[in-house]
Image 1 (cartoon, helix red, strand yellow):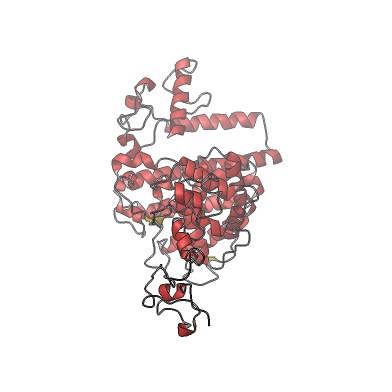
Image 2 (image 1 turned 135 degrees about the vertical axis):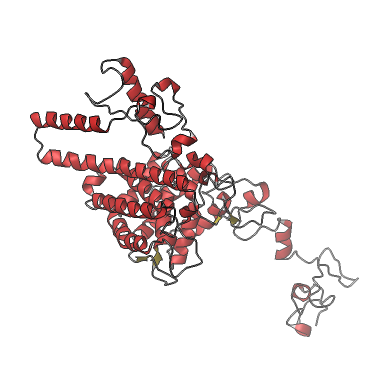
Length: 481
């Protein structure tokens, strides 16, 4: 038997040494498992001809301990020319061992809950009301999305859906590390034409078994943990304020395609939650409880964006108008239950001061009014196409409208019988501050909004330029708010 000249790699690296023992044809040096990396040979042999080749572990060590599946460029330089969401490999940086970051609401992020910061809650996005306790950084979102966006991937259990939705909701302007460019990159990856991201979202929207008490049943999707949270992404700031309109329209085309099932799910799930006076899932008592602010803001925004992006949505979808009517009833019931001093609804909003609750609900009702106006206009246009008398009837309608405005008219500032409504209510528009004041935001009295109708009551002469400027200024300012 020829003398053994090469070192056994397994003797030094495996616990207990080489399993072949004395039958091994390689040289065993040192105690078993000692991780000795050097070998000695007989003095009469030439080391240059019999040097031990480097082991795979040693090669990986020389390459910087690149983790399996990681992008080498990002690992070594912190940058990848393929971009954040176009690279097929995981973006890990040497020395970066971060995973999901805790997103506990800090004092600055709870600013909108304070009376002085209520202006942050103005708008249509749900970002300010996010209830996520954990979220991904943009790099982590890229890494986790890679699996979900594979062409052959399918959701095996609802847990897979919850994970996918959590990645989408990480794209929030209030989350540390996320900015507009990150949000647009994620939107482009999800909503690109013909992409698998749209297929994944469509699968969730068209789910045929959604329940408010799903528990851990493998085939049942939770309304609170999955379905409504997906709609929250549709209403997020990075989506509805995106300038990539073709991508947003592609995303909202899924609402158009699956609207019937969406309305069905909402009509099945919302009434029992309203009746139970809680949005909690009974089978998951330790889970995060959604607030009515999140649910109603997301629903109002999604329906409004859908109706404005798809002009025939109301007329083409027979369930649209009834759904808005049901949404009005749900919102009113919830608002009446959380507004009193002693609320009867289990909702986190009840922990806010009464004036803050009143303000936030006022914003929701304003959005509901805007949505109802779209429905009314669409239904009115339909009825006019069927049969609409003209001539004298139109004059009677205008006269009735003017008479109604006369009965409810209250002038601005000191012209009002009860005095100014708040500290930013003036007769002269030059004295009105553009940005709303705190007293204006929490005021329970409706602002003075003149009607832009001939013959409507107004404190300025009907033929004056000042009147026209006054009406346009007040109405445009209200639109900004």
